[in-house]
Image 1 (cartoon, rainbow, N blue to C red):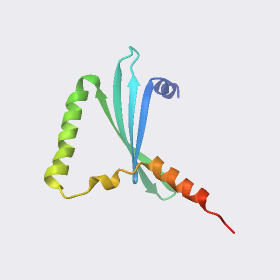
Image 2: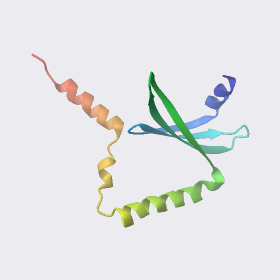
Image 3: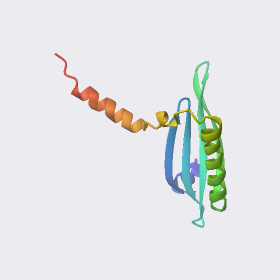
Image 4: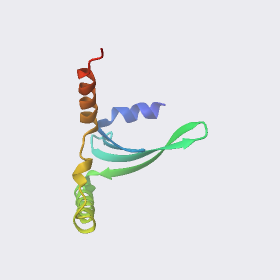
Length: 114
C-alpha cells in the first residue's frame, strides 16, 4: 500500500485515451532525483464468469529515448496512413469523447417535455 502512495506522488501528468474495450494511459512520472520518464499503459477489460477484470501492459520510456520513439512511432503510423490505407478517412475517429458528452448533455437540456 505504501508503494502505491509513492507512485501517486511522483506522477506529474496523465492523459487517458479510451478506445473501445481498451484504455491507454500516458503518464509522466518523476524519479527521486527529479528526472522524468513516461509510462504507457494499455488496460483491457476482460469479462469473467462473475464480473470483469483488467489486463494491463506497461511500457517505460526514458527521456533519452523520447525522440527515437516518436520518430519510429510517427513513421509507422505514417506508413499505414499513406502506403497501406491511403483512401481511408482517419479523421472520422477524431471526435473527442468529452466534446461528444458535452454536446449530448446540451441536446438533452434543450429538450422540453410536456
